[in-house]
Length: 128
Image 1 (tube, one colour):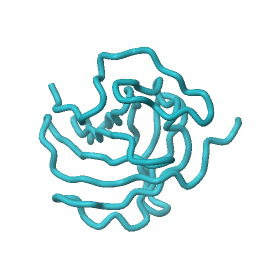
Image 2 (cartoon, helix red, strand yellow; image 1 turned 45 degrees about the vertical axis):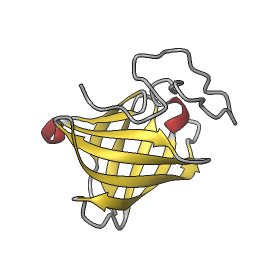
Image 3 (cartoon, one colour; image 1 turned 90 degrees about the vertical axis):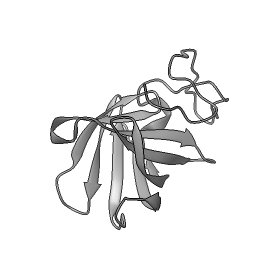
Image 4 (tube, one colour; image 1 turned 30 degrees about the horizontal axis):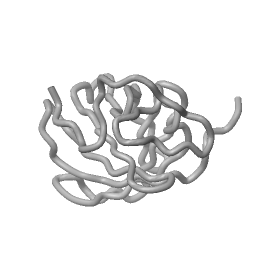
């Protein structure tokens, strides 16, 4: 089992993703819910390389991490975890609220943290 960031438990359910709602400790957004949109990512520590041009685009229960115009690495959203698919399977970004429209993140592999980052919302989700 992955270590959990203080203030949330992945087994908790009751959520409220209404606009302007700030999740209370122990409360998780539904898959994708409050995470929908375009996010700028910046490295804060650990073994991650500089993250210039890295963005996360999230819509519903899935998303992509992109670097500039390169194709993205797909992931599934599970609460406050971004679980990568394909060749990056096993890589999980664990998020914790860090102010309005911002999350602190830990990049983990096989349950071990190897880097930290912060993601800030650049644009909200757009209607289809």
